[in-house]
Length: 458
Image (cartoon, rainbow, N blue to C red; front, side, top):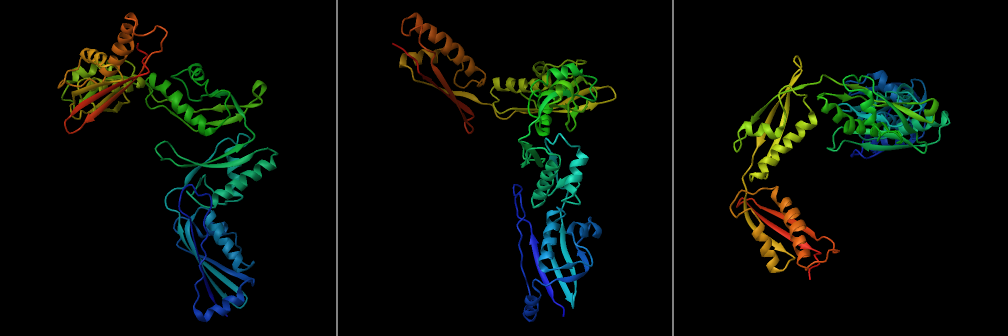
């Protein structure tokens, strides 16, 4: 007798999911239902395993991931388990199978849809007792085709966790395996991060293979925030980007990059900790060529070169360049261009080790001063301060002036005047000043409100 069984499996949606949802749907023609019921739980000899829908994955790889072997005796439950293993392998996002039986023989055909694109990288965050090769080998014990990545979702996460827990037990290392889906601040570059808690190892040394243009002593000096912390590959990588790349930028190494951190158990005074290796590719140190301005109408290029602060032939200090671009924005803000944005794109001349910047200026509209309101003071005092306000109605609004006015005219001069006249005790605390700027996009003007709180006047 022969019969056909269809079972469909599909992954659950959502990157944060840590297990696959199994959806089993049996579809029978009415005349075969009785035969299927009779075969439920019955074992048959597996005569063939076929796959439909393979493209990048070979049949041998797929059969290996299923765990099935020709000649073994199988039940429907065994085939369901094999289907789940195929999903957990991370190779497929959808799967169904068709079972054909004849007497004591069974053949199964899996209809699959392969995982599209590359998988998400797997990070072994702080497994400092093992090499990457040992970790990969251990994971392949549960996920035979593991290649350093895993799908965004699915039971493969549980399989990797199981493999890592077994590896810790085999080495008698106390600790619990934790899983965290991770990404950068923009939500891009997702990663599967596996870590060990309960067996923390601290960083007691750091090395920088590849460093030459910047001395190791300077790099170590700027790595004090890493020393003494519990080792984490993710943290070490983020630390290098946030604290050491700026060091390279200052020296003109604008293309410097750090590779993946690695940690090794130390020796001697460092035997209870790890030494972290941060490989660096420095690139060349560039000198400044020029800025090429575009979009600037309110200021000629010569007036923008000065706040940018770079001189031809000087080291192309990346931090100074970034601050210079912000200074140009502030210059525009002083002339009423409150929404001006200045962005720079480097143009490298590697042969001569020079860099120019294409600087795009989006000036936006020009805003003028409208009204000034001062709250929290007696009317005479508010009028006094209004007279001291230098931005006249209709004049270009200077977005640096409000801070200057609050600090000088209110916090300093007004308070000192109140103390001299005996209206305020010298022991009184300084008032709280809350400024507020309201932009009126249609009228292209600005209303300023300054509220003075906790001013102890007599």
